[in-house]
Structure formats: C-alpha cells, structure tokens
Image 1 (tube, rainbow, N blue to C red):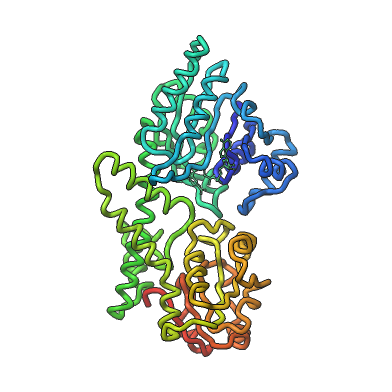
Image 2 (image 1 turned 180 degrees about the vertical axis):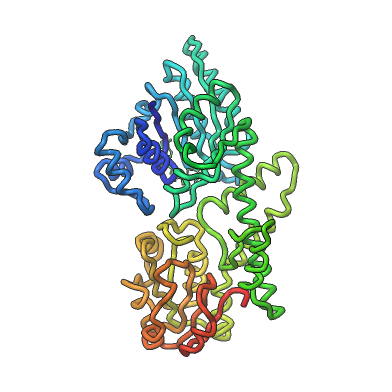
Length: 437
Ligand SMILES: NC(=O)c1ccc[n+]([C@@H]2O[C@H](COP(=O)([O-])OP(=O)(O)OC[C@H]3O[C@@H](n4cnc5c(N)ncnc54)[C@H](O)[C@@H]3O)[C@@H](O)[C@H]2O)c1
C-alpha cells in the first residue's frame, strides 16, 4: 500500500508518520525545501510529544521518506493525501487554489486507480470541485482512468496528535463511490481493529460540514463558559464550581468548558470565520458564531484588563512576567494565542516584559525584540510587579511560591487558566486574580 502526503506540516507529518508506523510505504512532499531538508536530516520542525522518535524509526526502516519534488507525490501511489494549509484570502474566504492545483496535478499524473484524499479543512463543496478538476485533467490526456476523491477531515489536537491519530474518537469519510469507500476502509481498518471506534462514512459535503460543525461547537462551549465566568465575577459566584456543576450533567460533559483567557491556535479562529463566510455565501447569518468570535476577542485581553485595574490604569514602567506563550500546553504553536494580545497590550502600556515558555521561546524571540526571554519560570518573575499565567503547562502547576514572592517586586498573580487555589496563593502573601472566581 503506497500513500503520499502533500504538505508535510502538522497534520501531514503526523499522519504520514503514523501511517508508516502501521507498515504503509509513505512519501511526504512539501514545497518548503528548508522544511524538507530538516526532516531529511532528522530534525523535527514541530514540537509534538513522541513524534521525533517515531519519525526516526520509520525513516530508518525505509517506510517514510521526504521529497520536495511534487511529482514524487503523485506517481505510482494508491492514495494521495492533500494536507496543505488553507489560509483566508483578503475577503475572508478560505483560499483553496492550492488544493485545486493539487487535484489538477493528480489528474495530470496518475496512471492507475488512486484516491485523492482531502485532509485539509476546506469549504463545503471542495471535494466536488476537485473531482471535476481531476476528471477534466484526465480527459485532456485522452485517457480514461478511474479515481476517487475522499473528504477525510482531520481532528487531531496539537500536543496529543499521535494518540488522536492512532486512537481517534471516530474517522469521518466523505466518499461518493463504493470503490472509494472500500479503498478508504482498507487503509483505516487497522486503526479501528482494537477499538470500539467507528468510521462515519457519508457524502463529501457532509464530511466537510462535520469538521466545521465540530470545531465550532467546541469554540462555542469555550466562549459560552467564559461569558458565564465573567458573569460569575459580577454576581459573586464561583465559576470553577459552576463548571463542575454543569460538566457533571451527562448531557453536557466536562470537556471544553474551562473558563480562561480565550482560545487560540490556527483551527478555532479560522474555522469559525470560514463557516460564517460559507453561510454568508448562502445569505445565512451565523449569529451564534459571530458572538463566539467576538466574545473570544474580548476575553483575550482579560488578563491585561485585570492587571491595569489593579494598578489604577497606569502600567508604565511596571515589570510584568508572563508564564506560557503557546496557545495551549504541549505545543510550540503561538498562532492566535492569547499571549500575543497580552504582550501587545503590555508593550503598548509601556511595561517591561519578561516571558517564559518551555518550548515556544524561539517564536517569541522572532516576534518581539523588546521583551526579555527568561531561562526559567523563576528567572521570569525576577523584579516583577505581576505574574500573568497564560498557558497551563504542567510545570507551572505547583511552583515554589516562597521563591517567587522573594523574586518579585510586588507579589501579584493573575491566573488566566484557574489552576491555582486562591486560599493557598493568598496565604503565601500574594494578591491573586483569576477568571470567574
Ligand atoms: N494543525 C492542526 O491541529 C489541524 C487539525 C485539524 C485540521 N487541520 C487542517 O489541516 C490542514 C493543514 O494544517 P497544518 O496545521 O498541518 O498546516 P501547516 O502549515 O503546519 O502545514 C502545511 C504544509 O503544507 C506545505 N505546503 C503549502 N503549499 C504547498 C504546496 N503547494 N505543495 C506542497 N506543500 C505545500 C507547507 O510548506 C507546510 O509545510 C489545514 O487545512 C488545517 O486547517 C489542522
């Protein structure tokens, strides 16, 4: 079985490596030659627990290889996965021209039956367009080759990606022929062999829609609970207990209802904007999602606002430590992280900023030249007038409070993820703020 993955970023690299781990022969193609060179020499450009060892093992066993030549990704393959990044264009629509280019190249290259699998998150109807493009390209060659297009949206979460691939809640497949359905089931059968999970097989439009609906639902839960938390502060209720009371309802469940300083990453913000735009094209207004997006934008400045309030709206010359930069733990991805909004606001307010993140420091160094990148979480709080916790990395959970209090100029802690116990932190001599309590 031969699989190629076009686009060797987060989704592409994880999927490729996991397929190789399952014994499949995998070729990864990416047009970013630097990226491919790093991979060829064994350097993994993303931080994902467990991935590096798995890549090395499969490269050594010759099941996984990397190439910059696109043709290598289309020739003599049973499945060609398209895992390119899909950006929004100037009008806020997802730009799928690269996916269309890949479909065309697929049609211009294949010699035998193969499946073009779209893993990128793409607007509803993209698989249909790809099918037409491929059929036209084959026809132009004067040939008649059977092929299928499958929509196979990805649900991996950064930091947990290998487990998400190997033990998925479900695999969603949109495919329009029985041959295509069989081919895709054959590929994924092993993953489902030892679990009760299932493949949800449907048409391509429905599969594309499932991806947007799932992401939007999660983001909606987060924004909704952030609003509840903000209201808890006003009425004197405890948002953590409210969360527990709500999450233990079996109709609701405990996930994605933790109050905090807003969601980030590439997925939630983009998929929501995307779905609003898709609906707009059909003259339908996604009112709930517009609110989800604007609540999140507001929530991302909540740590700064709490700090400014504490200091009577004069932060000029204050030294502020920030713990955590990535949009969530176990990733170095800072895309749309609340840390970005926080650092920009602190900079504009004239603060001296000291940051620490276990893995995202290089990204921060590239983006801001005016902030101090500390060697450790304790180094970051030296001389600080406040510590803002943005990302709940495990190493931040049980800090040595006495050491922190001695290091700080003013012992103020603003906990953006509600991981600390108020009574404990206050008993250590700190002024403590959090979200919704
Ligand atoms: N990252 C996630 O957690 C995640 C989860 C689910 C779905 N998705 C979706 O999966 C898709 C890929 O996301 P990602 O995070 O892996 O993106 P990414 O930016 O990490 O990787 C995309 C890769 O594609 C390469 N590329 C771009 N144009 C190319 C071309 N013409 N030919 C060959 N390679 C090309 C880029 O160099 C890059 O390495 C997106 O649509 C995203 O929305 C991402």
